[in-house]
Image (cartoon, rainbow, N blue to C red; front, side, top):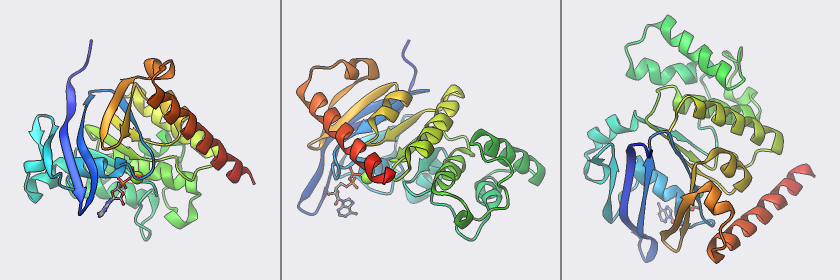
Amino acid sequence: MVNRVVLDVREVRKSFGEKVVHKGVSFQVHEREILALFGGSGTGKSVILRSIIGLEKPDSGEILFEGHDLTKMTEDELKQVRLKIGYVFQNGALFDSLTVEENLSYPLEAHTKLSPSEILTKVNAMLELIDMKGSNDLLPAELSGGMQKRAGLARAIIMEPKIILFDEPTAGLDPTNTKRLIQNINRLKTLGITGIFVTHDIPSAFEIADRVAILSEGRIPIIDTVENIRKSNDPLVQSFISEAMAQEKMSRIRHAK
Ligand SMILES: Nc1ncnc2c1ncn2[C@@H]1O[C@H](COP(=O)(O)OP(=O)(O)O)[C@@H](O)[C@H]1O
Ligand SMILES: [Mg+2]
């Protein structure tokens, strides 16, 4: 059975001046599904994610989140919607001057009526989930790159968003930290998260995702289950996967040096 549609992106077009980025991007994300979004560098993956949280306005098309069109919302309405959308940036995006605990508590203090002890309970449970138990009082600068990303992940999900947008969360991580982050995300998956996972890291995407969408030339010509993508003979799928795998391998070799 296919789950309910949480996000419905319909024929989104977007240009920056002369540069046409999206020529009609359409896809859906279902509840409890992780959709991996692949695409070459500069194809507009981040712009899609930014459009989903209302930081970019498409020139035309609709983005329905739980049935409501984000592209027609006022800034105040968008603020409410953003509380239901988690965004995991490339660089953890933690507040530098706040400790890990303060970083995680902040959204709960600002947007919920939970008591300080309820907040602490939630923060500690979250730290345990991301293998960072006891790191409460550390500052972001005292964390390794891998820990910063996991803390960024924790902060994005502590509000229990309806959908989580991951923008290349494993970029810049070594294989060990990549594996750890992927394990953390897989653990979240068993709790039933819904998300879009933008990445060049195809092995990780295959491990996490239910379906894969490929963004190419301003559209999504291919969207299918991981199983079908793996065995696809489609030239676009094949060339994309082999190219991305080669790039990934190169970056691992660079890391190992
Ligand atoms: N705010 C902006 N102003 C002008 N051009 C932009 C802006 N944001 C993105 N672009 C351009 O749109 C294209 C897609 O960007 P992006 O979504 O960041 O690509 P990627 O798929 O690598 O995430 C790029 O050519 C980028 O230069
Ligand atoms: Mg990007």
